[in-house]
Amino acid sequence: MLWATCFSVGSAHARPAVSVKHSDYSVSGLSSHELKEQMKKVGPGVESKVSGDARTKWKVSWKYGFTQLPGGCRIHNVATSVQVTYIMPRWKNSADGSPELRERWQKYLTALQKHEDGHKDHGVDAAEEIETEIAGLKPMRSCIEVERAANSIANGIIEKYSRKDLYYDILTIHGTTQGAVFR
Image 1 (cartoon, rainbow, N blue to C red):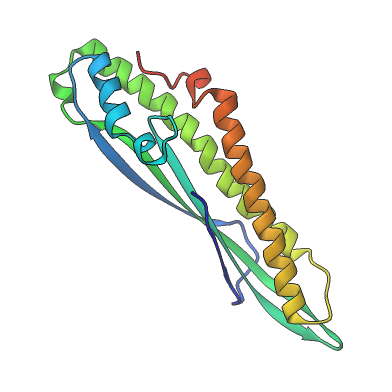
Image 2 (cartoon, rainbow, N blue to C red):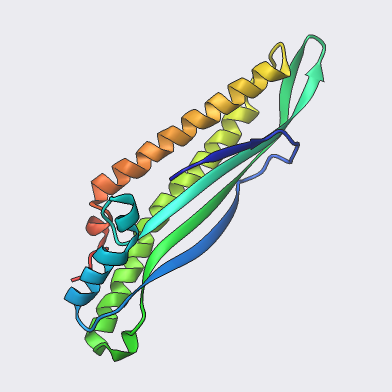
């Protein structure tokens, strides 16, 4: 679900650049039962064997440059970016549904998006922590040593926030405690 890439190129130290992509999958039905069954049948949980009507994927990338010092090397110009992809249900025949069902669907989508934004926030938080930690690395004897340390730190942070994503879903029961349940 999460991947990281390292580029050894200089860039200014700043907040992570965040790009967001929205993807959807179509469901149809004229009752909440039909729509729920469609989401189970064609939703993002089908591929991953993990329950949930939506999915948020994030990918953090980091880049930095090196400065040679007498007897050593240090990192400079650390920058991070996050690519976020939301996969959400889209009710393709909503115009045929009752006004009450459309209203419930909209409330559900709002709560579902709020839950998925929590996953996005984990990716952004990971990028911010990676940038801070790498930028704070002390000079080392060689640039290879600095690069290994930076990438080790970044990969550890990615793992930490991947676990936070899992715990977040457990804690919220995939958004149910946040109202992301369609009845």
